Amino acid sequence: MLKITIDGHSTEVEEGTTILQAARKIGGEIVPPAMCYYSKLKGSGGKCRTCLVKVSKGSEKDPRPMPKLVASCSTPVQDGMEVQNITSPEVLETRKAIVEFLLINHPLDCPVCDQAGECDLQDLSFEHGVDTSRFEEGKREFDQIDIGENIKLHMNRCILCYRCVYTVNQITDGRIHGVLYRGDASEISTFIQNAITNDFSGNVIDVCPVGALTDRSFRFKSRVWFTRPMDAHRDCPKCSGKVTLWMSANDIYRVTARKDEFNEVEEFICNECRFEKKNAEDWIIEGPRTITRTSIISVNHYQKLKQGSIINPVAKKIEKPSE
Image (cartoon, rainbow, N blue to C red; front, side, top):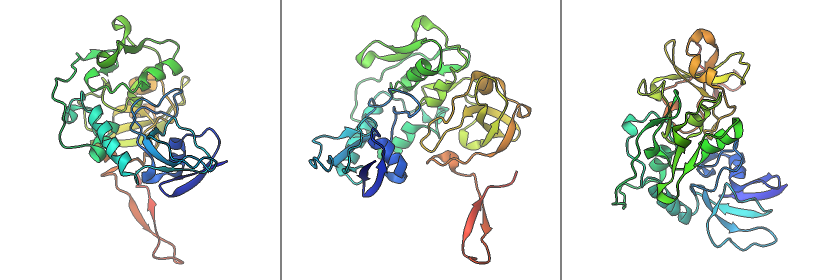
């Protein structure tokens, strides 16, 4: 086991663990943000640079600090390493510059974007963004296209994190879409306007950190904070059948995979569960989904306080609301 200290918090991890994975093990505010890294996808990370941290001590054997900021998602832990994230002014200033760079071409269309309320870039810009932009040139513009009957592609919003490309490559049979062209002309697209029609194509919607890939069946129907996320499952022959239903009254507005506190999918689901099962009778509803990550979705979903035991009458514990 290797010992690492991040912003004064220490933990022990196995050899081969990255700084970001170690920070997630500790948890809390010291976890660097990540727009391209996805623990479920091999090869992801190292593209958005939002997870840069400062290594103030390389290891016990070589205590010299690393000369430049490093990507925590791809830098392995060394025994005795000391890392600064939110305690480093250099890291915070660099992260602010990275957010400004990501917003160079990203349109400010949050009022009409279906990703608003659960957008990683929206949260990142709120915490580290600046009020003004120094970019004076024209933004890139692309036409909206349908890549299949269920998925809408807004390349204007894309930050080229490659998550959707890795998803299709690793959990489906064939590669249909990818990154075309180079430099500032790069774009995510299908080859010769092909449609993505495999059984797990809808997962590209869940892994997208911005509103570049959206669910056509949910577009403009409701804001996510007006719906109630409910855990549900069904006996599905293609996937685990464990999903989150976004409901209003008894109506199911959309179906997504369940996500953890880092906004990553726990288990990928098939298109049948996602797009075709929109009736409450199709599911066994388990109860309200607790959104643990920082998001407006977790607001307005209240929980009741229950009086503690007689032994400790001051203590109170959280109880989920009854149906």
